[in-house]
Image (cartoon, helix red, strand yellow):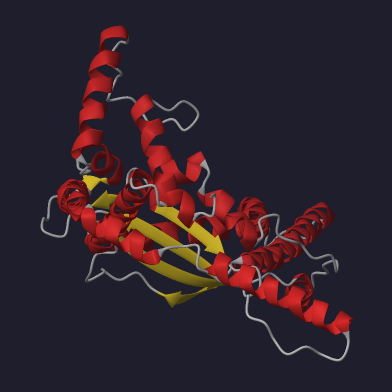
Length: 378
C-alpha cells in the first residue's frame, strides 16, 4: 500500500486510506480477465477452425443451392370508400328527374377494406384461382394454376424425398382419389387441401389502416406466373367487391326489368285491342260501341301510366347499379420481376459460418478453462 501525506485530522486519513483500498480492489477486479491467455488458447486450437468451417461451408452451400429461386410481385390498390350520404343524395336527384321519390336512408358496406385479407384467405377465393391459365417464362404451354402448383413446383431434395415416402406409405392404406371430379370447395380432396394451404404463403394481402391502401404480394418460382397471378388476384378481388357492393342493386334491376317487360306487354296488348276495336267500328254510331271504345281507351291510358312509371323506375335501378359500382385506383401494377427475390444464398452461408466460428470459439474456451473466467464465474 502506498502511503500518502498525513492530514491534520486522523478521521480524514482513515477515510483516505479506506478509499485507496477500494480503488486498488477495483483495479485487481478489472484486470482479472486475461485476454492474452484467451487469444493464446484460440491460436493453439486454430486447426479446429480449419476443420469445422470448410465442412460447414460445404454443407450450407449444398443446402442453399438446393432451395429453388422465387420471385415476388407486388400490386397496390386504392379502393373507393362508400359514402352513404353522397350516394343517396345523388341518386335522389336522378330519381327526381323521373318523378320517383326515394328515401334518405343510405347503405353501409359489410365488407370494409380491412377485411379484404380475410376474404382472400377464404377457401372460396383460393379455389377460384385454380382454373386460371398460366404458362412459364420460357414456355408457351398453357396449364391451369392448380396443375402448375401440383405438378410443376420445384422443391429441395430432402422435401421431395419426404413427399415421395409419405405418398408411398399413404397409397398402401388409402384408395386413390378420383382426379376427374368437379371442384367442390365444400369438400376438397387431399391434394386440393394441400394447395389451398400452400396459397397461404404464396398470396398475401395487407391493408394499411390509415390510408386504406391494399397491397397484394404474390410469390412464385416463375417470374411470369408470379406477375400473371398478381394481376388475376387483383381482378378477382375487384370483381368480388363489385359483385358484393352491387348485389342488392342488381337484384332490384332484374326485378324492374321483368316488371318493365310485363307492363310493356300489357300496354302494347291494350293498344292493339283499342286500335282493333276502333278500326272495326269506325262507322258505328251506337252508344254501346262508343262506351266500349272509351273503356278501352281508359284502359290503354292506365296501362301507359303504369308502363311509364315502371320505365322510370328501371332507369333509376340502372343508375343505382352504376352508383354502387366501386372504383379502384391501381397505384402499382403487376410487372414481371427482372431479378429473383430469394433465397439470399451468400447471406445464408456467411451467417452459418459466423455461427460455426462462434460455436468453435466457445468450445475452445471451455476446453482450455477460459470460459468460466470470461463469464466471471471464478
